[in-house]
Figure 1 (tube, one colour):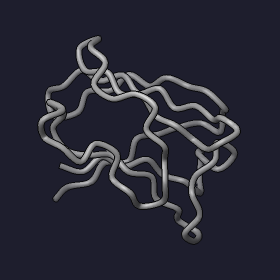
Figure 2 (cartoon, helix red, strand yellow):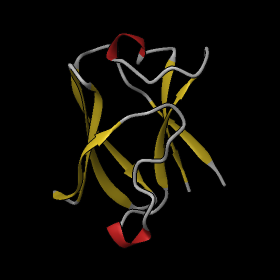
Figure 3 (cartoon, helix red, strand yellow):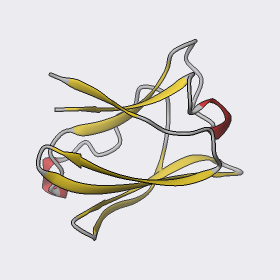
Figure 4 (spheres, helix red, strand yellow):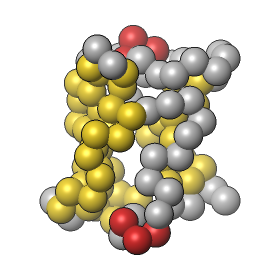
Length: 97
């Protein structure tokens, strides 16, 4: 598998437009009181919404979703679940295919 780091800023809510495996993707990452969440669109169609980000847990998990590859957050300094304050450095969002 090949991994690509998706750059994020230490902001409580943000949207990233990125091309992944010929897919035009939009990722919304946002902090709630209960954790960090991610929504995924492909070509402006919502594929997955309200996915709770956990350390090293794949978010999509199913090719039936129509998304090539998978996404996960990685804690580079331990095994904590991500929070927005560490998105620029400690918590990395990766795409693997």
